[in-house]
Image 1 (cartoon, rainbow, N blue to C red):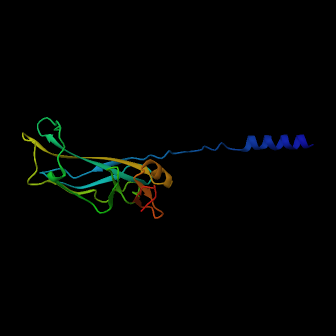
Image 2: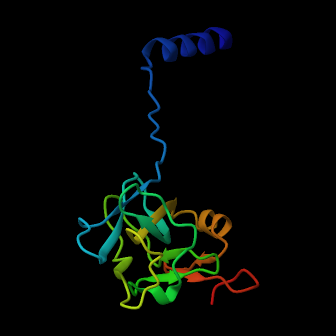
Image 3: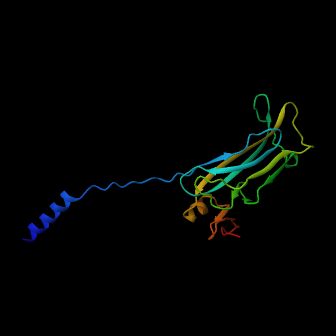
Length: 176
């Protein structure tokens, strides 16, 4: 009787149970630099948008060079910091690795606070001559905001705080 009861129960479950489809959407972490059309000699109001499908921390490297206006070649010597004035937004911190880190998590589809408020050559800039102009390139990347150890292990210059903001890492690896 027990064999028939178990066999009948299994047969009932197999014939009366619908398939369940397990849908899984992998997380995508991506970002894109947004800046107004560059006119004149001033780059300003630069932000970075989270174009992924999960909240993310965002960092950016700012590369300043002299660029030939005719053919786009980059001059072999970098401009000195005395050659230009760079104003970084207050919601960013500079890590020991040279990157600028947005202090807070950026929601899906949202943009960071201003990274570059303005960058322009100074009047006494040592232009290498010819038809060179100051060029400011922003290289941005993003990392998922959770779990905390994702950012703590991948970006050792900063740590994620309990309040969801980034802080500079001290020499021992902890936050300030």
